[in-house]
Length: 245
Ligand code: GLN
Image (cartoon, rainbow, N blue to C red; front, side):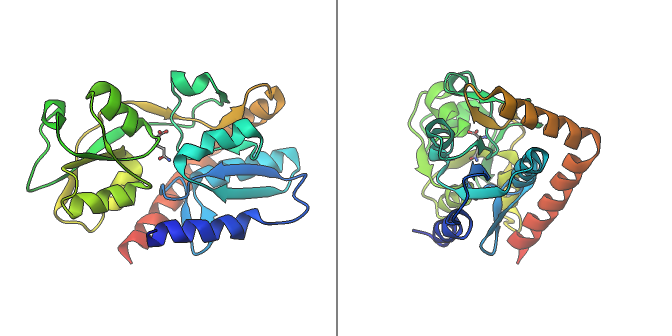
């Protein structure tokens, strides 16, 4: 297990082992995805955490946050282990079969991370290459469905980029914001333009209309009063500074 994964396990205990949490609103995330969620020491912080904390405040509940691997995030709200899943989760038709999504809070997409020694020129160049992705993500779906090939799966965008640096993959596909964070200070790496357009939203178990309404109201309010823009600016700056250390 790499250092980041170990830290994530520690954070699970730091944030998830409280007693008497029956009345708390529980968020599940995957804390390797700056600036949406990342670790500040043992604490899980980021844009998604602020959104979910604001929902808890609106509902007058305590707030708890746990981190798991990305492919366990949506199952955690389906099983009832958590109330809200927020992890830079892209709204997709497949996921809509299993969970309800809030209104989107950001429009973004995936990009190709490449080595300047092997510049990316277009999607045709990806055919039959070793492509690193974080498992369970829309980047994985892109490689499977659009390119019709198997990706090399990692547990985080940073792990995928480490594989690129080590020459174990030829390209990485990841969401633009964590990808930007990963290549900070890496003079040999660069990013393509957007390969897809995707919306992030909060996922909730089906059949919880009141909770869904509270999340949608929170997102609308945070957009209107400038909090969302401030969270984006502040957590981008903080996670960039952490990467630069
Ligand atoms: N937006 C991507 C997805 O939903 C990746 C999210 C993540 O890795 N946290 O699949």
